[in-house]
Length: 241
Length: 142
Image 1 (cartoon, rainbow over the protein chains, first blue to last red):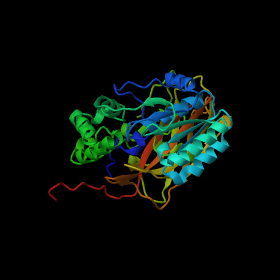
Image 2: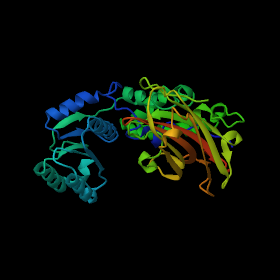
Image 3: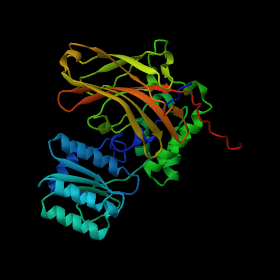
């Protein structure tokens, strides 16, 4: 069975935590200076931006940086207001001064969001949230996108030197950005499909690197990396113990 | 053949060898793996985790199942005393490896090194289980 090249645009390579947080010019965001700004804002703030602009990715990196400097960090992702009890529990579970990172804060709704925020303020927990719009928190950073940002993300994906220019071209990246109005997530999904469509007839790159009879691995079957607490090699690492 | 990513002075390398040519196994086969660790000179490894798992790859939500897991903390089995290791497990009946367009199912062996502090290093090696033919995209005229 011919083993195929892993699609570099799949979720495992592009989800929050798997890629670096970058500014619209494509340069990595200075997380340390954002933490200084967070402190200056009193410890609670919002990362604001439209769908697919890198808010969740930035939140994950900030949460990891906070944890690295010894802070206790709780992380919650909201899907709807029904998840509000989970946030409330996270706030209650945290100790005074701890920070609770909440993705998609706007899903809590205005009333429940106000109650959660009041609870956090009264119990001296800090909140770092992402939202599509201003939600009453001081704004830590506003995420915006650009073709240069998408290109820089693509450059950082596994095997870029192997498939870029053969299966996916610069024009494809720019077109995907336009097609989805700057939504990076949707643009990467489109590039996933483009990669799949392009690799099918491309027999030379369908097979991975050489595999000898001793069962040594081909280079494209392997991922080797430091995780720093993030899972960028597929499955959630917590499930591995 | 292995690759490593340079992120600081530490350049670990985990070279894995499977017991079957082309890393292709049948369901219920015994999977046996040997590995060798290099590039950890002077760094204390406090544990090594071995795992065999499958995961889905594609757009959207992902899934996984850990089939085999083993954590080694015995110092006599860790570098620098021992720089090589081995483990084996019988493979299950399913899921089989699958190369779909929207979703793929992959099996892999992972060797994870835990260094002093919070740093860890993961080495992942894909192998196949079964013979499900890969999916093909229909051309627009089909």
